[in-house]
Image (cartoon, rainbow, N blue to C red; front, top):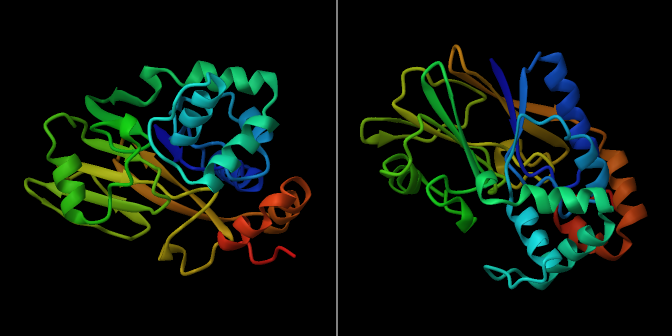
Length: 264
């Protein structure tokens, strides 16, 4: 089975359209979102409306916080004023159907999902698979990946897919050694365990793109061969810029800082 796994699309409709088109072309069997489908970008309703047939939908920190705002509950952790303003803007854009979707999705069971295929256990979470509610940006080096994740007694799955950091990384482990690799293709069949951080599909934040932010990305994992491929795709950059300028005029400075240099 081919699993297509993406994360952090952040209301970037053109990027999602490119991923969905490529997944169909690649004959992906199941699509999985690791959360943060909304937030930051201009098209939250349009993005959610295209994700009705997901195999698994994980809660990200943006869904988590917007659910807290809907329920008028205190936030679990601090966020800066700009991020909060963007989340409030997103909430104001959501139609009733998608507000209800956020409410129904943000339940305990959807912060981490585990499946078993051919006796191989695979986990999916937005952040730390040991404690997915923490929403930690915890993966910065091999030691952290190994000690906080791959050697943790509570992380039993062989393959652990996460998002959140927007920085694609792969950490295969054999016995007590783990390594980081930035290649595009991986054969994970021989490793004891692996942590896979998928790209930030709607808002990349790393040099892996060689400073070219006009790309989106996701991963394809073949459960039979246990091979993983990092997919890089162009998308309609001009369409995204036009949507930002049309729908989010009060946030243009923020989007410029995120690399949308074509904004005027």
